[in-house]
Image (cartoon, rainbow, N blue to C red; front, side, top):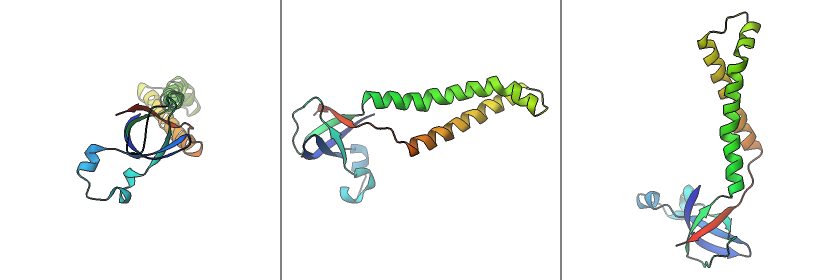
Length: 138
């Protein structure tokens, strides 16, 4: 994730930033305070970059949070899909069926969809922690 934003307030270690999206803003007829995508968010300045109100900055997520998100959203479904394929013969046996290629593909897709629902539920119940960071000043 990498975004641009305008610094609107600086308090201690937290910097409040208004998203800066040129494409969306060019066609928008609303005031920024009326538009949902223009909600300010907070970030930290771990590199102590020289910033003041009105400065355009580049924002990035913490690397640890990005890695955790990648593992949860990519590796977990992949492992579930492999497990669905590997367990398809046993599932077919329990159902009194023969494990054809179509049945193996069906089991793989069912396990993949189940993992997607689990990932969605877990990330909504336990949101990933991580603070946005200012990485560049324009």
